[in-house]
Image (cartoon, rainbow, N blue to C red; front, side):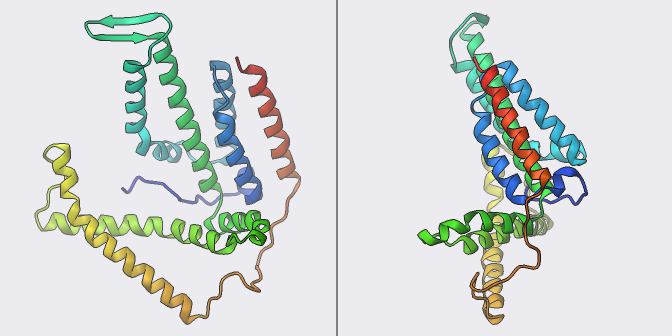
Length: 264
């Protein structure tokens, strides 16, 4: 758990850090859609090259990005095995007894794995280079036009901000409860998978109780300070688009053009 980096912000002065959060949010959402349009080695190679360039420009150590991929390694392995064993088509690459691996199975296993890695890296880059407060302000600003249709933009952004803020707190609380249970003789490492999952029940129950108690305390504190949502609220720092954000739009346009040209 100490290696989890979900929702963490890495302070810095890189070019990616300086971009407007609205531009980064819009780009990440559009980029995640664009990833699903890649369908060959050339198009995925272009996306990987672009992701590598943005990671380099962010000036964030690679070990942090590799840590963000660790929670999905098991999922990637399952997807690879699923496609290798069940996807048929193309030339037979390997055959032994009941096991047959086809060319299309290898192709789908590689492409689906690359797609998932690109999605996680892009989402991680957004959270690493954008503070939770900037993310909240950017999301609220983008959703503000929909308030006329009844969408509670401020409340939705506040909910996201609180969730991001308490992710490290929940992990820390989980680690404390786990160590307390281990001091009482709990074993989380030995036994088969179902036994180990069952051993986490004494951790989950006090964790949920603590989370609900913390949420109630936060609600009471907000009410005591007469919090009334986004009504007539002002902001200390206003968001403004710059030429750097315009450059991001131009780069994305060229990226879309490149994917369209490289698609089969």
